[in-house]
Length: 112
Image (cartoon, rainbow, N blue to C red; front, side, top):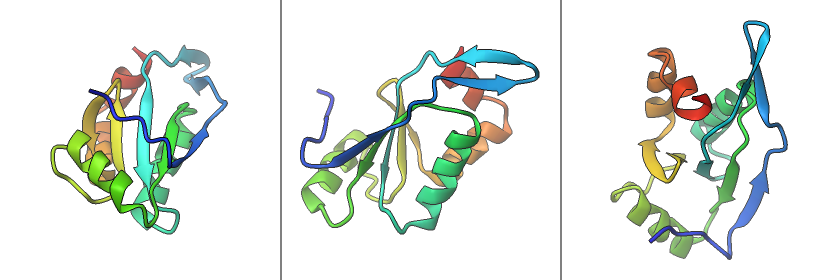
């Protein structure tokens, strides 16, 4: 079962493509991120996604323990933020997403 928080504020980006090496890449994957507003790791992960022009659903779960518990179920017990999902698959937090990007795999997951 996929959790879609109803009590959590959502913010969806409107950008649909990323300009890389002179050509447009179309996003193929659904990207979701759970965040707290004042979390520097969340801000760093959002900055990476924004720099790539990724469209995503953002779940702001500041102080909402019920939403955090539901996120943890999806994230295999992890309660820290951010937690990122690509096509409903948990890919991890800030360090995980940046490591995937450093290996050149993030664009493949999102755009291919």
